[in-house]
Picture 1 (tube, rainbow, N blue to C red):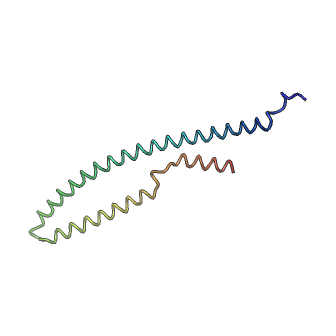
Picture 2 (picture 1 turned 60 degrees about the vertical axis):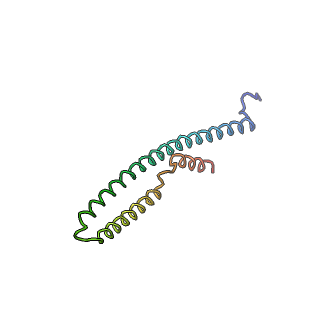
Picture 3 (picture 1 turned 45 degrees about the vertical axis):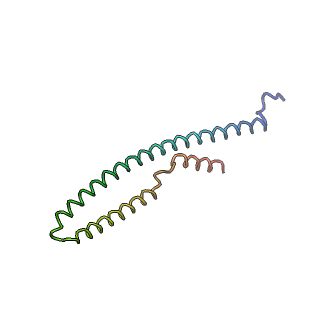
Length: 125
């Protein structure tokens, strides 16, 4: 029989399989690095925007609180300070619960990479 008519053999097939697996792993690493850079950029933007919003919000709350206390002082006296404190504690608790809910939604995960890795695992197993 002519050797050129036969397939590449076991060693050639294993080498081809190794090249394909290496290419697959390399493409997944590239996808993960792209997604990680996107997540990093989004996270940095989120931190900057949140910091600016926090500073602006604190100024607004401070000045607004002073206005409410000055306007209500004659009618309520010291009780207006207690009412304002309870209000701010309730707002802080609501915001903390909202932040926890956002983290549970996994906004900082790598969905495309994880889906591809799961598909690769399922294909290989």
